[in-house]
Length: 281
Image 1: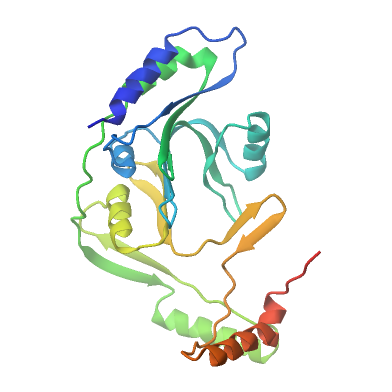
Image 2: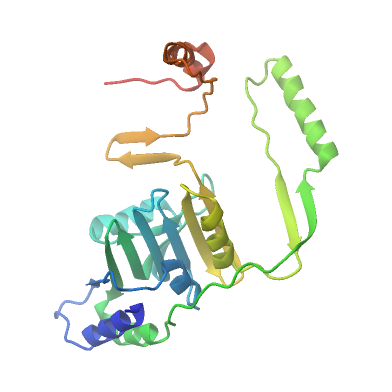
């Protein structure tokens, strides 16, 4: 049985070897054997360096755990500029619809894709000695303790009265033709009896939310953004855009002919055509 700690030792040995005279960005990548028994999330949870990012594909064909920030980017354009200059680099994190994003080039990335896995160290050669010291601080994987907390209070924003008022305002605006469609949302705040470790919540979500995209960005030991989504908003491949977030719904039928009629109705529905126009070229 192998552990990731042996590969970390190999990375430190590689850092002790001479680098090319030209200083700059480098990557050292080692294959991770199938015999490695460490769980990526458990290994990430054991680390005390931040930020951390975990991601697993809903088909489980790809999984990644990264930690430490060699470079941080507050917007996608800056991250794309770095990748253009360093095509082998991979940036992780979250982007925002408005406001700054949280994107970073990790110091260390453990990635599994299909049946292959690798451990990649990103560094600038002028900082090789400091990088070796940082690798020595990484801890071995330990099992993630199960969730042990209870919910003490739940508060909704807006509350029931505020929600009713907001709903009435939306209906009034639609009736006056000031709006065509409204999607209402609210925030819920839970107060817990004990601290809730983000990796434990992520592990619990993986166990019950199957065929989901699992993601976790830990800013610190006590701050994280995570989720398990069954839906991919979009995938961009060059100029090709694929999306699953088109909310058109119609009943199904056990009879194939009737099911086809219902599907055609959905395609011909004026409301869906108006909200989701499609074009080719």
